[in-house]
Image (cartoon, rainbow, N blue to C red; front, top):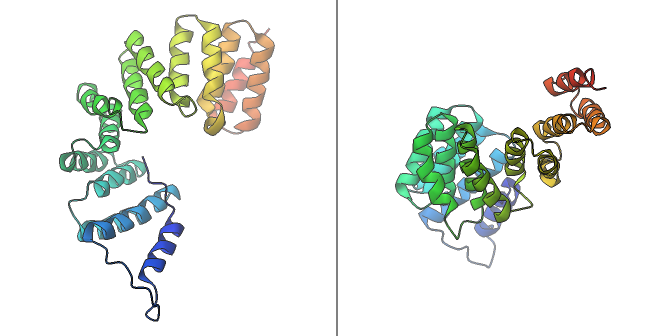
Amino acid sequence: MLRNLSSVYILILMNSVLGCSSSKITAKEYTRTERALLVVDIANGALLEGDSVGALQNLAQAERIDPNLPEIYHTKAIAFFMKKDLASALQAARRAVEIAPHFSDANNTLGRLLMDLGRYDEAIKPLELAANDSLYRDAYKAWTNLGILKFKLREFAQAESFLSRAIIESPRSACVAHYFRGQIESQSSRMKVAIEDFREAMKRMCAHFSEAHMALGMAYQKNKQYEDARKTFLEIQKLYPNTKYSEMALSQIKYLP
């Protein structure tokens, strides 16, 4: 959802293109849109550092430069989401899609916000637009969100289909899709495949996915793999001390034979 350029890199880039007055190299004349995009990238860097206020300050500057740039409003939606201001986030995401109806990142964000607000019927269209965009590198995120939406509606067959599509699209990044697919499999008592999905949900970038750790322990317990369950619950206590997951793990250990 965010651009890859760091704020430090952007500052170096801006310094290099502006240069000093004694340079023999003529600085490129940037268009209004290009200048606004540079500021949006600085805002994205602030978001990566958890600074939503700094991001919004930069976005206000970008908006003054070019108020018709959809990336401004998409990043603003993410910043407001970080501040837990869903109403403002939704307004910003709608503006991004209004300017650029086929902006898949913005459609995915809009759909996710609508889903989080419980407006499931409205969320489906933007999520489907993003998921079915063959040029959208992060289409797996939209498929995952569609799967979560259907999971919330207890339409498990379709949810599983969407989540499986997310995993096919990006097997190394779809840890959330693995987690929710595991939940569906667990509810259907398909414990071996559920355990495998929960394990996959804890790999790579999601190594500290606490909900997946807890779900794995519960799946082991349900499948009567008591030693594996005990090991997992003890690991949870070490990884997440003084949290609800540590308390839940301790509670479950008491019931193991």
